[in-house]
Length: 574
Image 1: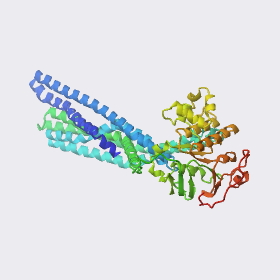
Image 2: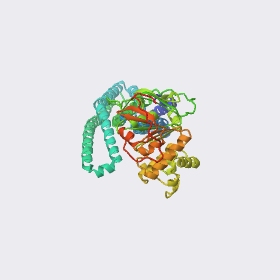
Image 3: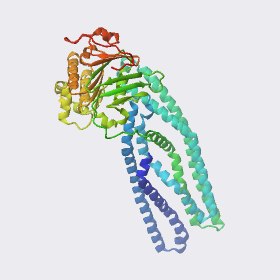
Image 4: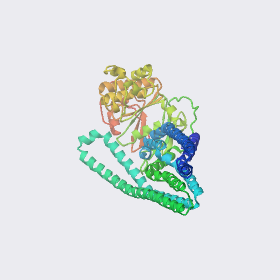
């Protein structure tokens, strides 16, 4: 965040200088009235009136031009902020949301939008104008020390009111923002699970919970608005009252022949202009507090020291070494994965089986670097995953998650990972995933829209398109989490051929499955239970062996090799 300020300091400096000239130009109408009352009316000089009018008009034109330039400059700053900070924020958010319990940063992009709006809105203009209030007070003091002291006292009282507004609303605004984020998370969760909500008749319960959250938020917002409204009304009342008092004091000085009528009018207008930015700050206080909170959250997110990654690491071969890997979810006491050690050779197919909740999917995410390990390490060609640049490493990884998610766009867009879709590479990935024939039978082939989340495709079609996405770019490591969950017999046979073809090309495949039919393609099988490795052995296909590990029994391909699973201890390495 500070890097953005340093990089664009010249823009902020220019906006500050423009504000100085604008505020000086705004003195022109007051000085014009002073001269008209004290010189033009007494001398009846038309020439003086014309010249004063031309000079004042020129000053106002300069103010108009600079105010327009300042407004456009601030809009540009907002756009530069969103462009420069937004992408980095999105990358960090994508990293954080993959970790359970990381909801703290899921609204970071909204914070970026809030700060962009603030940089382009009236709040920052008030911040630029408020520091020039002493200039107006000095000008009033030059006309009359008494009136200057009155203006100074008025400014101090108005600043105190602003401080009271800050002290009484800051904590409540922070809590209201948190409640708003919680309510947004709840609504997002409901939208993602609308089918479950409707099927299970949960709509009334969802509505009641939403009403409770919304009611609590409204109660807090009403309390904030009550305090802010009271302070805002008091500020406006005080400002108008001060101008009346200023005019009365100036009129008394005129009666006592200590000032002229022109001074009386001029100082009243100047005081109003001096106090206007402070009043505007009070009116924009909610936006100011929200922008400050957004800045603090983004600064905490972006201020982390990025891990140093050696950019010159060679292309990975696919050899994976897992050393004492343990993972404890944030806020949990019990590890989901504990003390797992295994070596996976390049080009090997390792199958992970075990009962539900044994830590297989979590281990897969750890192998990909999606989750940071609590202890131990995952090494790719000897280098820890933390040494690899995620974007560079991602090109060499393929992943088919348990919950398949496609993006709005075409089949080709999704296979190409939303990058530039090179037709040859897309078709090659589909052929390697054994899904080319299925795609060309779609209404528009590779140009068929899949809809948000892939809703235009069946579950099996989504899974097979996602499999082609995993094979896109000839990755060195492919992790498949329940890739046959929605496949029929034909689809499962195509999946087995795809895995065998990947192994022939030297691709390392980690296969998580609960169905034993696909185990014939595995070189080794690792059984997990309670987050630990129960045993590891070479390929076997006996249903009894898989069933003892918690996998369901099933038919086995003819011609499979006899069972040769060799027992190993929970911490053993194959």
